[in-house]
Image (cartoon, rainbow, N blue to C red):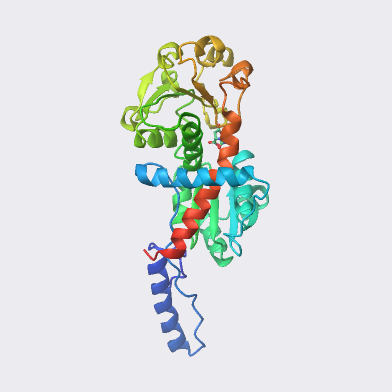
Length: 353
Ligand code: NCD
């Protein structure tokens, strides 16, 4: 039986695939008396960032602490370092994105990497290439970091199991968006000094939100109290298992909270009717100055973007410079992604297991 390294037929991890492939190739060369195909030297098993779930608080803190150092660097005139000089980062986005893709691109470039954006519309995916074929193609290009966004939950993990480089999940379906949660955590920590003990309300379309899932895991790990506020139709069945207190009314959900995190109504992920009308949704769940009165007077307003003004958030509160930290989130996103690139490539360079 012949396996190409990491081929779609291969059910093993990269290291075992290479061993099997190496054996297969030697047999082939003996039988057919052709020159042996040179095999690439084994590289250390890469570390990926696929999810916040199960990430210990100490590891989250490690990312946040390093990101905080990059915040200062990004605010200084000299923003560029050559830490990732000679490394190649590919942004592979199977879904539209402006801020996350740009943020990773900036992060990679500020650390000195060569950054390539693979636009899915012109890639082979449109021609029916499978995810595994894509992985094999990327392996042949000797990448160092692959940043992936995909509409299917679990697709990024599937790719990560097959490629020979660090993989960062930039959002997979409804599942997770780990760097968004890290940047949200950093935004809160920089404004409040800590995360533990804070009351955080995550409001809106929880059902379709990978941002909500990653944030619930991160905030719980860091000792915050998480509430979710949404109509029953926009809550996943397993919400209680995730560790959040459920509210169906903004008034009770926002009572005394320190942080109000609004989510976009993700109509592109909806098949069928989840809310009676946008107008009614805004009436009951849209964040307005009036509803915000239930929260603490200094409560911060967050939103991962892109915002639907007049749907989940009123412009008056979104643009309130005293309360809204939405642009901080964008700024800190670059620093968090630099920290992720730094730590993940550093660990890959120094570990073998
Ligand atoms: C989020 C996403 O893509 O999951 N946005 C983002 O990363 N900036 C949230 C959203 O699309 O509403």
